[in-house]
Image (cartoon, rainbow, N blue to C red; front, side, top):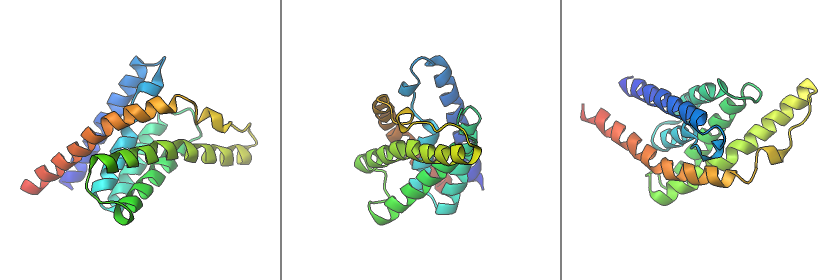
Length: 171
């Protein structure tokens, strides 16, 4: 329980940092790392599936607060990324946060999020008879810079989770 409270405050801190960074870099938002996505990846790497999915849902809800997409896009996307990371780390790679595993998972999550957002908005546009948003709006050339910034910040966040888990085990 105490670990979950620490994770929630860490998630909220990352949310505030991401919102502040998006405000400061409003002309070049693609340079801002997706801290909520990185939180979900690091949490799914180290924790159980139910805990990962619940925190992915909470992170998605935080992301929805400032989203211009249909409500639920970020929630579904981050839950799907959590499930994908959990599946990959339990079946294909090691569960340890090595640099190569972390880079692979960040690339997977960063490319999976816009695809899920596109599919969700395609479904919502069909249901509400609104115009369909082109997939080019989700996969623009700036996703390369988003990938780079996510990769730079992913490993330190994953190591912070290891630090929190050691801190919790010591008590």
